Amino acid sequence: MRKLWLVFAQTATVCLAVLFVVSTLRPDLLSWRARSSVVTIKEPSVSTPARETASFSEAARKAMPAVVNIFTSQDLKRPRHPLQDDPVFRYFFGDPSDPSVQRREGLGSGVIVSETGYVLTNHHVIEAVDQIEVALADSRKVSARVVGADPETDLAVLKIEVQDAPSITFARSDRLKVGDVVLAIGNPFGVGQTVTLGIVSGLGRSHLGIATFENFIQTDAAINPGNSGGALVDAQGNLVGINTAILSQTGTAAGISYAIPVSIARQVMEQIIQKGSVTRGWVGVGVQDITKDLAESFKLSTTSGVLISQVERGGPADQAGVKPGDILVAVNNTLVNDSVGMLNLIAALAPGARARLKLLREQDATEVTVTVGRRPKLQPQKP
Image 1 (spheres, helix red, strand yellow):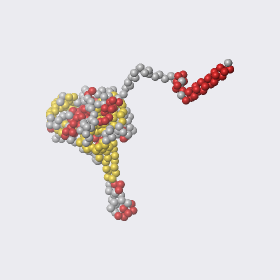
Image 2 (cartoon, rainbow, N blue to C red):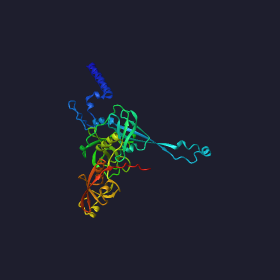
Image 3 (cartoon, rainbow, N blue to C red):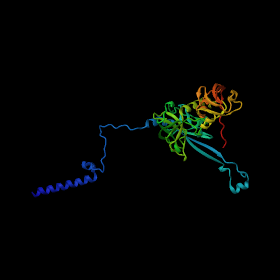
Image 4 (spheres, rainbow, N blue to C red):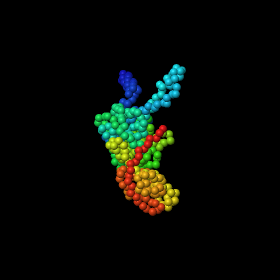
């Protein structure tokens, strides 16, 4: 009996020792220890398929190769020192010509729109620069030349010599609606290609003072310095706009960003590629929107239309008999709502074409026919 008790005691001791070692070194082997967690965590069973979560990775993957980073540089010359050639001055103060040239660098984004290497970007990204370098998504870097620019819409077209360039797919802008999901792709602050998510907050935004011709898409997708010229794409990765500006008091994204619709960008791009510049109609008038006070003073029942405040002498409108004080209400039977709408209607006319202008003159309706001229080029402002 004593021997059996000793065998039992030794066996129990060995089992307890083994249990202690296992619980210390491999507690996961003990089933009751694996279930003793602080909280109960639910895990899907192997037989239950995982549900797909909302993701726009496919749209980003489709569009990102066609979005490029643009690096620009400009030589800034300091004024020549009046004593630069004086040997005494040079002896005591050194040669002041060494730091006479400074280099200013900038960055932005662009979108490859064709396999032949045309790149669409903002005019302000490449304005007055000496060198332009484009970095593709696959890390290739190539120099670019300016094909043409249109400051009045803040668009420009570049050309890079790249074979089989990854080009983006254009969306139909007329299908874009407020509330649609959009992605903004660009190079904010030079950190590298970045994708931000938002929705379309508004359409047809104007009177912002950003460009002459304004019809912007508003979005809350984050757009920061360096994003200018980048792509705004829909949930399928198709281009709907060119990121252009933000409304912010700090210079960083505040939830209100603007992009040029792809319909305008395409029209400007095609004219620049074909002709090197953009041609628009012009009749030679200055206008202002009709406020409630103006409507009351002119005894108008609505604020639609524009007041012609100035007529350029010898211009198309002057030759057709248009006078200051006339109210323009329609162009070729298309109603004019405000000055921006009127400007877009006239600009869309071909130079040399004849257009019918419906006017109100002293509350009497009249109609004149004007031969459309060519809109003068916007003169660059002197610094």
